[in-house]
Image (cartoon, rainbow, N blue to C red; front, side, top):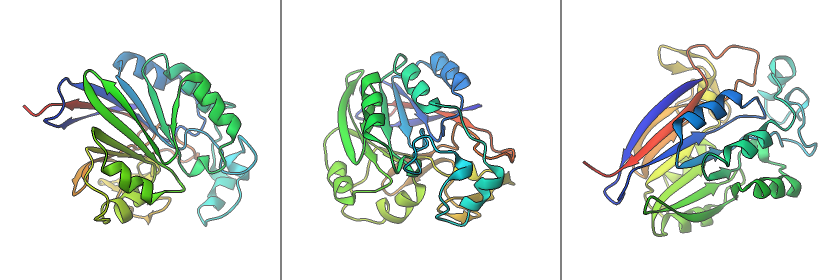
Length: 262
């Protein structure tokens, strides 16, 4: 697993702090990820969805047996690599001892159960389902919001107008590209975090091959870019869910240093 480091500058930051951006674990083993987090010692751990497998009403359902709703789901019957039982919950249980954990929901949490929510909250995980929370980090007033798979755009608009250093977790890059960046009622944010695309699975000459929601040759798969609505960072994800190797596209843990302008 690759560790990718970015720096975001904001003159309102009174003391630097470190964010770990985790995405798309899909119930896979978290041993290496936890080791890297323990080494990094972030101040916040922000998880941008698809940590669990709740893509059907059968909790923990196999990717290979998922309901076929889109053409690319057919591939899972032949190529899927399922995770381990309770892999996502194991990550949450271990990660909360490292730093406060905030968790927004992706499409694989479409059928997240009340039992799942209670377990996460019991561990101390902050689930943000079209919701936001305030936290003070090293004297910085930080507001973290989670835009869910079933997006509430009215909430997102109101979130963008609140005080503090506003960090939006939005699992789907296409939600950001097609709505957040084009809606004049959503004000600029300080940081936007996404996942979902798995880095495009295969990359050749810096071009990704395919991404759910974007199709072939997707534009938004990983990396950092400045937008009209703030800095946007997309994680390539922390697991490989199919048997095809992630060519030129390793799994990654993203670390973001939030610092004042020098």
